[in-house]
Amino acid sequence: MTGTVYLTKEKAKEFEAELYDLQHRGRKEMAQKIADARAHGDLSENADYDAAKDAQALMELKISKIQQTLSRSQIINSNEFPDDKVYILSKVKIKNLKNDMELNYQLVSPEEADYEMNKIAITSPLGKSFMGKAVGEIAEVNLPNGLQRYEILEISK
Image 1 (tube, rainbow, N blue to C red):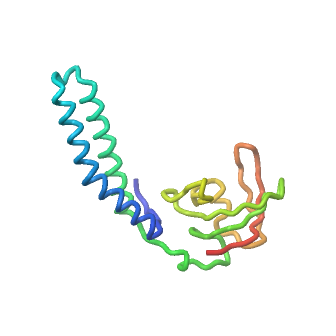
Image 2: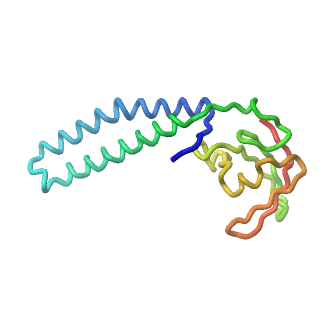
Image 3: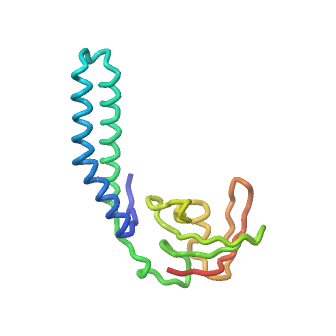
């Protein structure tokens, strides 16, 4: 995977804490699980041992992914961007022109996206349609339920 990963300082700290925990506590616990499973006897027919080794491989993959993300990360702050148009970290209030429903979102990197917290990725169809738009402009996006049109009502940090 190549390219810069844009993270807020808070998300970078979350990743660093998770990485530290996996590398120290996680690896130690995994080694203990493997040792316990190994103690059950014949490894060729030991499902606990196989499961522990699979879990270890998944944990190491997660460690590697977090390390790669952090190595490519650039810390960003919403104050670095003007608020006249929608940029990464912008908070937008939009109106669905089909049903007049008003929604609030914050545009973030894919690594920070959390739909339940109204944080949408700038790489998502919705996020892409908002990028670079100003208050009063219409964003059109093709969604599974058809073409949707949204008016940008407010932009803030």
